[in-house]
Image (cartoon, rainbow, N blue to C red):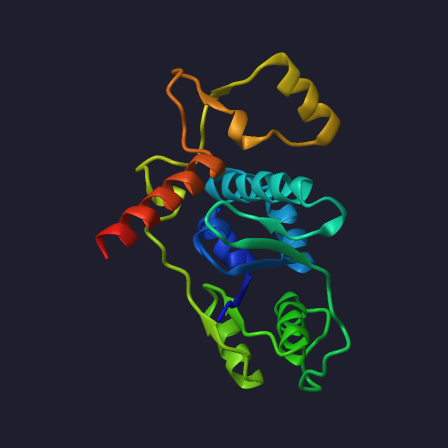
Amino acid sequence: MVKKYIIDSSVLLYSSDSILSFAENIVIVPEAVIEEIRSFAWEKGDLGDRARKAQVLINHLIAKGKGGKPVRLLNGGIFKVEMNHNQQKLPRYWDPQDFDNRLLQVCLALQEKNHQVVLVTRDILTRIKADILGIPSQDFEDDTSLENKSPYNSRYEVVVSSADVDAFFRKGYLNPDRLKAYTDKSIITPRRWQMRQREDSKKAQKLG
């Protein structure tokens, strides 16, 4: 059965390309998560770098799904942004404006529609809250992530065409599939990563 994986900001800040790690399932990034990632994008150091990289990927996927439509990923999965839900009842002493509680309300709303929901978060307290509400949850530790492919991954020096620079100022982001390493060696972009994952899956099926 296809599952709906709700991605927490703690996961995106750990692995900015984690959206691409759930082949053949639906990956949902709630509006509240996008808001929090945007707030971290101003930070300096690795945290800010990963927030900005996650923001670039999300912007790229949103641009593909015009009008808020789901986006088909090359690994067979689907990406979707879910707007906030505030009608779901929480324990009366839980602040509805708290980030974690807004995230849990999204999970509850989808559960009420009989979707098989799994909250993915690296925050143990959020998982405890999810358990109280009967929401399945799991941690995220995935060695297939692009973040774990290189011993140094916080920054890339890249070159782009003048047309891409113009597009950046118009749209506010660069298409990561058009980036090249400063050394002229191709870097692993989300599209290339998805293509590699698809090829590996086909090889595994043949061997299986």
